Length: 90
Length: 370
Image (cartoon, rainbow over all chains, first blue to last red; front, side, top):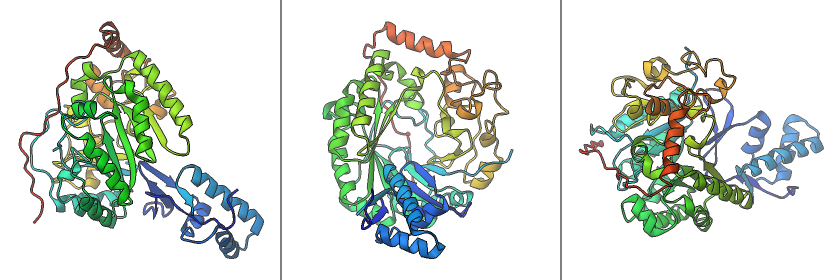
């Protein structure tokens, strides 16, 4: 499990952009494009030095969501992105 | 028909190259017209972004031969595109890498010919291998994302284990082990390049084992030669669907090899037309868009939305008609042509034959902006 104090960040060579055609967030990387759902985009936007715990707290506040359920969601999303080598942890 | 939005532009900014690889996919009869200027490329890049393009690959020839490459990268970043440099590494020193990085270059795909310097230099027709090793280190030191590309063919396929070892040494995150496909110079040199069935079987085992062993460390993409497949590749994800290419003289192409493989298709030039018009309206981009153009066996095939009938260039080169089903498909009446090539190879038991090294366009007329 990804620990609370881990600081997720985009892996080298990966960039977040907003697709002008759809208005959605996309991750761009060598030979690839990943269209993000809203949750993933919200998480990745916060991957700028915050810890996992801080990201979950911020999102819970913004959406008035259950901390535990949200924590599971965020971990799952980040673990999936890590498997794809789009996110790494400091 | 309504055009979808494209995702990626391949910018073949020059056909000049210091290497002479016999499998180059560049056209064999390259026109030596003047290359697009810096400003013309900037406009093409803006127009591509306007169409929805999110990624640009700077390719060639050797894109580093363009002294204005950093300006083009900067133009692409200004248009918010992801920028990838597809290069032999020749011409990349520390300073150039820094300038490109500062211009916003996101990633570099560096090509190698083999793991062993003698064979690699023989294939490249130049003393290139050591400079490529240096280039890999320079890219990493500049903090730019690095991936590697090896074109695999009869002369280097047996060295796949050593080639994979080299990719580990160079600590790249991604490597393409791409068997040569037969377009351009490679089509001309097919008899010398096509691996034997035995070689292919062995290489597949090596690649599969390496994929498992290096999972999570290096992403390995192993690509079979189409001739050994039984179903065609979903070439370009469909003609005029996601990709477009603009070549050094400004011809806009649905596919980089189409200009040489499909001689009866007339391509528009970005000097005469906007990219938007070419993408949506031109005959060349609409000719094989969708499924209405398909002959049998594609027309009634349940796979037609999966492989899109395969590769138009392959159909043109092997059957003389780009509108035929890709003949690598075993359902194609023309599969016999592919089988004949493989049978000839089996009979010759893969003896080495000579290849013709790639040569540059005769005249190099470049007019970058002052």
